[in-house]
Image 1 (cartoon, rainbow, N blue to C red):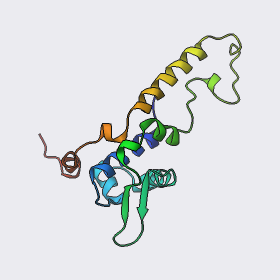
Image 2 (tube, rainbow, N blue to C red):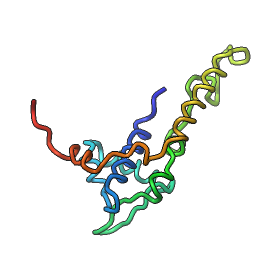
Image 3 (cartoon, rainbow, N blue to C red):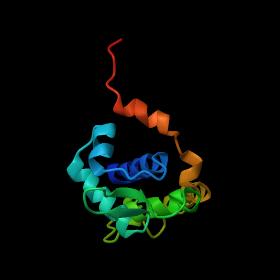
Image 4 (tube, rainbow, N blue to C red):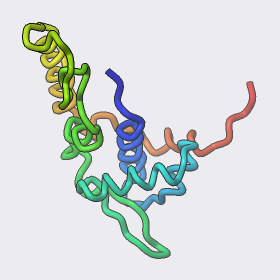
Length: 146
């Protein structure tokens, strides 16, 4: 199983925003730090704002902040919000055409594995994966050739 880039970026945006503490961060700042597209990042930030994970303040002194404490942002909830589906195999999808679905035992095993994956994420919060602000300063610094 692989999470989408959208979910990956959502977690990284939340981590970055958390590391900033009370300081508001901008989409440009996050995009520059991670060296990613501002356009794609804007979509991620909008989804996180709509879902209640970020607060967005418009204007010259605006920016982004966490909408709630990091210890109340559960990773499982974030992933459920940002992943389009959890169709690990065809039989998990609508419009399933697999001819052995009615007798296949793989679906049960994969569903159990998916539930275990989500249960682990449900036990972890943003606070549990938080980085210190100085670790993000490293991202913003140009790398010296070795």
